[in-house]
Image (cartoon, rainbow, N blue to C red; front, side):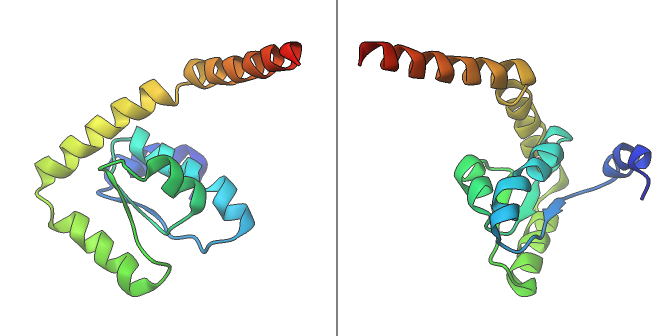
Length: 125
């Protein structure tokens, strides 16, 4: 699918899926897919990637499955069984949380604060 069409296609989506097998690379990389889906207001089903579970473990719009088709499919169907207004409400709320917490200015401020904290600790030693 051409990249330019992705936003238009996601506008018609009901649930975002992150069906990746656990590996060193996926544990690091594919948390971004969840951010993209939540940012678009979509609830998500994901396999149990470490970084995703760590960051989104308490996010009501994200459900985790085991890495197998049966439980992954069950979680997708569970989202589809939710009343559309509930799905949309959870998706909108998650989108707002992502916009606040994962906006570039918020991320860069956290990074700067972290570096400054390390620098201050090193000065004390």
